[in-house]
Length: 111
Length: 198
Image (cartoon, rainbow over the protein chains, first blue to last red):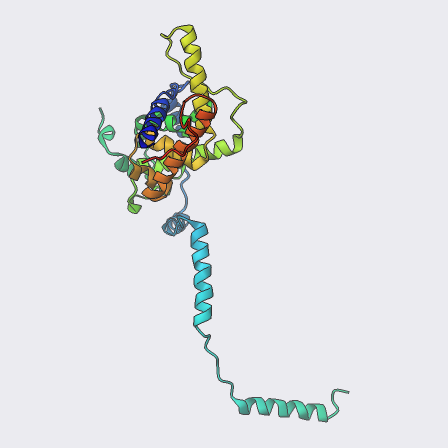
C-alpha cells in the first residue's frame, strides 16, 4: 500500500512538473511599469499626515478577526473579574435630599 | 553596472522611500519577471498577470512606506504577499475560469502536431485542475512547487505556520490526484483505497 502511495506521489509530481511555463510578458513589462511610475509621482504628504501614517503603520493588526475575538474575550473576562469601584454615597446627604423633597411636596407647590 | 544595481532590495527600498525613481526602476527590472510568473500561475492569463504586477509595483511607488524594514521581512517575501493577494482578488472577481475560457498556453514549437495537441490537452486539464483548487491550496502549491520557495518562506508569505502550509500542500495534492484520476489522467488509487502521503 505504501509503495503504491509512493508511486502515486511520484506520478503526480511528474505531472505537476509538466505544467506549462508561463509565456513571456507581451510587452516590455518592466519598462511599461517604470514609465507608468514616471507619469505618476508618489504622493508627498504633509509632515503631520506622514507622521500619522507611520504611527498607524506601527499598529497593523496582522489577523484582525483573531485580534477582535481576543479583545472581546479579554473584555468579558476582565469585566467578570474586576469590580468597578463603587463610590460610597453619604447617607446623610441622601436623607437631607429626600427630606427636602418631602417638604416641597407638603407645601402644596406641586398643585 | 551602476552602483544602484548592486544595492540589495532593502537598500533600494530605502531609496524608493525618498522618491528615488532610479532605485524603483532597478527594483522593477530585477523582479518584474519573477512576479509576473507568480501572477500568471495564480490567474492563468497573460494580460491580467501583467496588470497585476504593474499595479503592485505602482502601489509600491505611491506608498513605499507600506513596506517597513523594521518589521524584519525581506522585501521579496513581502512583495510576494502583495502580488498573490492582488492576484487572488482578481481571481475572485473573475470566477469562474474553468470550462469557459481557454487557458493560455506555451507549447514547445518543435513537437509534432499530434503530440502538441496531446500535450496541450493535458496541460489544459492540469491547469484547470490547479486553478480550481481552493485559493490557499493553490497559493501554497504555486509558491512551493513552482516558485521553488522553501516551506518556511512560503509559510511566511502566506502568514501561516509551516505545519499549516504542509497541510495545505498535502490537501492540494490530494485534491489534484482525485480530480486527475476522475479524468483518467493518472491511474492512481485504482483499488479505491486511501492513499497515504508522507
